[in-house]
Image 1 (cartoon, rainbow, N blue to C red):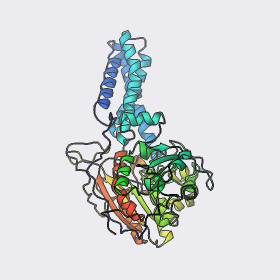
Image 2: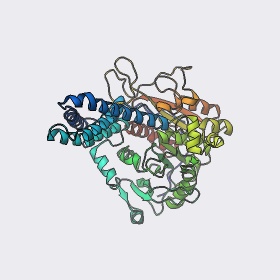
Image 3: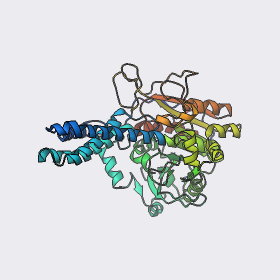
Length: 495
């Protein structure tokens, strides 16, 4: 099979509006339905039994102690999350309530060992892990990390990904009709970065296997969120059914996808920069492209390379593209921030760059674009979101469905001149440098500055929550456009 024709890229167009998050209701859901409700009921029941002691001393002395412990724990959790800039959207109040109740339940279990009946003491001990479990359920509902019980089980057991094969099986599949693409785990050498990373994954579409040697297909680098594994786009995002369906309709021809490791460990927030937390930027720009080109024969032309990221990964996508136009000609930023963030600007400089303000400027996308000057052929899509509204018109922060919510896919109204978060507040309370309510957001600001230096970009904003379900929906809606943009003909998409 010869390489697919790779003509001039089509002009960028906004991805089609999304009307929901299909594909996340297979199996027992962890985001809605009976499992979260049962866990919540059991946790509340056990906590009520644990707290309901009959003695006056309990209510006068120990209940206030439990309440204070709960409030301190909830505040400490909120303050740590706020201080570290861990959230792109403010967490739901229910999460902090769960943290507080878990801590209060722990105190009740300890101080109540000598009071109450045996059944109360047992309930108090059981209440702690069940309340902790429900806290995890609420946290998962906030970010949509594990959509189903099966997805969580597969991740915890490190089960193989869909259609995953070993690298040594690839030669046997050469020049065959594989039906669907294959995912292979790879260990990319740290040739130019010295960045210790986990195993990464490469998706090879059916067209890669046809013929005596692989065609020089375009490549899309896929970057996940702040807390991540390289497999998150597949396990949490569950994007592969949509990719397989698109490949089947497009003669088996899609870009190669490489699911990279931007952190080195689950909780190492590098923001894809070089610094004390590791030279993540060097790994993604020096190690990965060369390896994909040598091992899988992908195209070397930067016009046929794109970088796609979600949340922190969206920030990375913009940053890597504007810093390295010689590597990437296209980027898709899904709900990213204004720039690499780990708290306030001062905290970010200390945590990500070891106190080096010049390094901060080298990785700040607005500064990079201004210093670089005109770009040629760079195209980007910003897929942003705004929080759904309650029935009274107030913004929701957790992305769950509420009465009066606008339908997903509705365009956000932008208000020029809306108040922006001050520089010293960036990263605090889930702020990304601008307020993401119904005001001009980070996506608009980045795109506006990008247009000034020749970057052809569009902004598409959807009402929804900052969850993996939004990320997956945004990617699958953008994927046909992205495929055509990288030079692969897609029926129905004109240039």
